Image 1 (cartoon, one colour):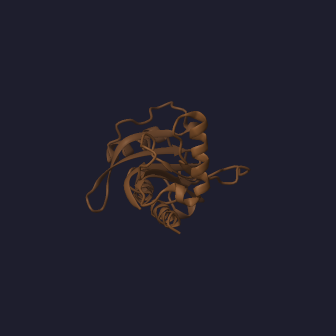
Image 2 (image 1 turned 90 degrees about the horizontal axis):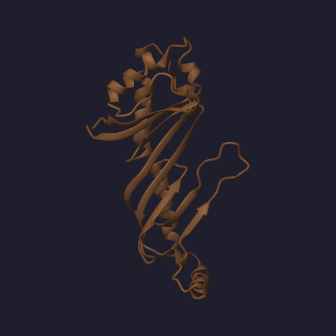
Length: 213
């Protein structure tokens, strides 16, 4: 399994934003300008925007410890903060930790114990040494029956695992599918998982091993 690119690496830390701001400071005066200055966001929320749906910061610059500059997006919700990079969920979390650790300097409160839950969305474009059809040849045969009945070539293209749909807060599904626009015999795939990027890659390696099991 070879990772070709990261489509999305999102980390959301669930916490009560009111605990960060017990004094009720106007974040548009005290927080937003600092974030825009420090991370050079090209688009950011303006005074009066609806906070209940989240306020979004877009196309910022996050400088890693090694000097690498990453593009980053961030969203502040009433019940958490999210960050998105296109490298790894670790980078997204490192950005969140840096932002939150700077809050006391701006007159806000921060403690890592405020985080109640962490939610991830990892999307990867990969190249795989194997074929989905090898998981179950019967599905390839069934695709052939569809092709014969329709007159157009069809192929087994995706597997997906859903979380319990009765849950109030559901993680995204785990999906592995042929990359859109690629021919049916392509070795390029797109995958999504509710996991940190590193664990997502580990699972994909296990899946690839099943193709030859």
